[in-house]
Image (cartoon, rainbow, N blue to C red; front, side):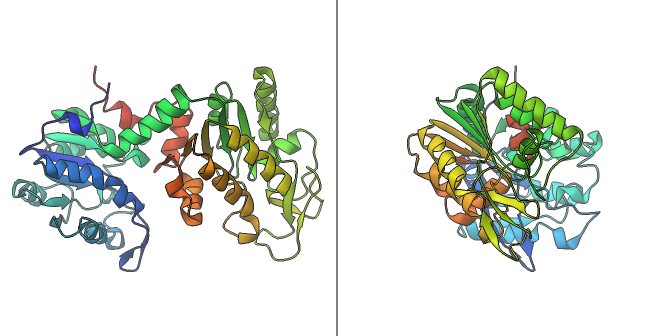
Length: 397
C-alpha cells in the first residue's frame, strides 16, 4: 500500500519533496517548464497544510559542482509559477550545516529549493551516509518525481527508510493510476498499444509484457523495419538491427501469433534517400522499400489502418514516434496517431513519456490526452512490469 500526501498531517513538519526539475536550460532561462508546472499541485498542497517545504531535484548530468547546472534558474521559474505568493529560497548545497540552518529557519509559506543533488556523486551511488544527511532535513518524505522512480538513488530510495513518514505526491499518484491501474491491471477493452522508436531491443520487455494483455499491438518507427526484414521483406537502406535482433524480432512475431494477438506492421511507407529529407520523398505502394531508399515514416494506408484501430479502442497506450517526426516531411504518421487518440473521447489515452510526449506537446495534442507521462525510462520499465525503486520505497506493509 502507498500513502499519498493528502493522507498526512503536515502542520509544522519539514516536508522533503523529491521533484523532477530536470528541465532544459538555454542561457539564463528555462525553455520548457512542464515538469515544474506538473509538481505545483503537490507543492501547493504541502504549503496549504502548513508544511515547511524543502524541494530536491537533479538537473542534467554534472561532473561535480557545475555552475551551468545549478538549480538557481529553476528557483526563479518556480517563484514565477507560484505567482509571487510564496518566497522561493535557493540553497547553495543540498547537505551541510548551512542547509540545516536554512531548513530550520523556514517560515510558513516559504519554499527552499536545494542545489542540484548530482553535484554530489553520492546521490547516484545511493550512498548511505549521504542518504542519512538528506533524511536529517525531513520529518516527512514525499516523492513526486516519477521520471526518476526507476533509479535507486539516495534521494529516490536510499533516504526513505530514515524518515518517519513517507508518501507519494499527486503527480506520482496520477502516473501509478494511469500506467498501473488503467493500462496494465484493468484496461477497458479493446486495448491497443502503439510502439515506435528506433530499436526493437529497447522495447523487447515492453512487447513481451503487453502482448498477452492487448487486443492489438501497432508498430511504427525504425523498429518496424527490423520486424519486416525478419519476415524476409526488402527494406532498402532503412535502419535495421541486424544479427541476433532479427532472430529476436522473429521470435516476438511467433509469440504474437501463438497468443493470437495482432502485431500490426506498416503496409506502406514514406521513403527518401536522405534521413533529413534532402531529395525526392515518395510513398511506397506496399511494404517493400526500394533498394536505394530508407523508410522514414508510415504511409497513408498504414495511417488509415492505425487510425481505425485507435478509434475503435477503449484504452490506448503509445510510446515511440511513427517516424522521424523532427523533420516535417516525416511527421505525418506521428501526427495522425496523436490526432486519432485526441478525438477518441470514449477511450483512456495514455502517452508513455519520452519522444511521444515531446511530439504531442509540440503538435498541440497534449491537453487532449487522458494522461501524458512525465517519465521516459521510468514509463518503459513500469510497462515492462518491473518494480521501480522509487515506488517500492514508498510501499508500507
